[in-house]
Length: 314
Image (cartoon, rainbow, N blue to C red; front, top):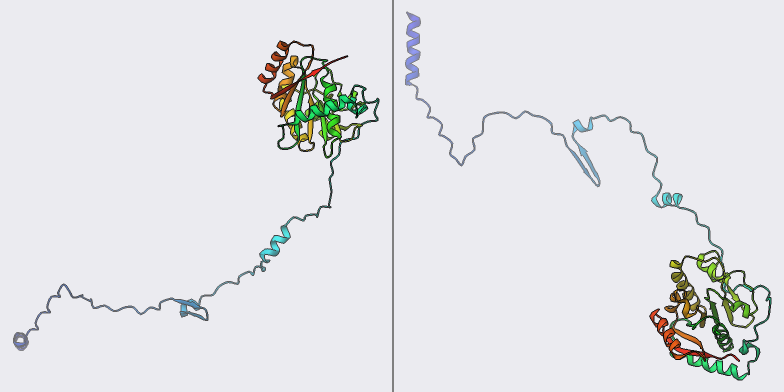
């Protein structure tokens, strides 16, 4: 009974105690912070500067294994020098050009080369006047190239060409070369008393250097590229002749080409476009119609026909 009375007293006392007002609800602009406690843990950090190195205790406590030291690297310049190739300084060398010495002349200059045999002969003077007229209007870069072609074989084109060459070679500061481009009757070297061992065909085929094929004649300042050697394919002939003529333009003041006759038009064709001027050699007794036909052939082949040379045999 006494216990019951005590319980009732406690219950009445609780009713009489004022109740605490409920906490106001948080507004939307307030942040509700839960009642919890942060666990105190150490944060790891490392600070590095020019004169500063700091770290947390747990970082400093880490034990690292011993590191194998690498050998210091050689400077880049020394390393490159070690692998650079070694060059040997070349010895100085000088090169001069001169034509190959002709073999001992087997004969004399042909008697029909009047300009050589008789420099004061009236015919020699005629050749000098003829050369002046042929050279007019043909100046250009490098040496001048003149092509002589006969109306047919054996009309005196080679003899006329050599007389003109001798006259030109005797002029001051004039280096002259003659090219024997005949196909069937090559006789320039023989008329100059030479017996060449190599010729233009060897130079074109590559079996002989061009410098070796060009021979010095008995006449000062006059060289000859004779006929002879291993023939090359016709399709390569034009290009090879063009290279030879260009090479000689750089070394001579005047180049005279003894070309095939007009009747041999296939052999004449590669030469017509290489010359600054072409001249038709025709006997005086030939008909004008034959000369006009030959002139038309040279023009058709691309030649620059500048005139006719009339020959006369006594």
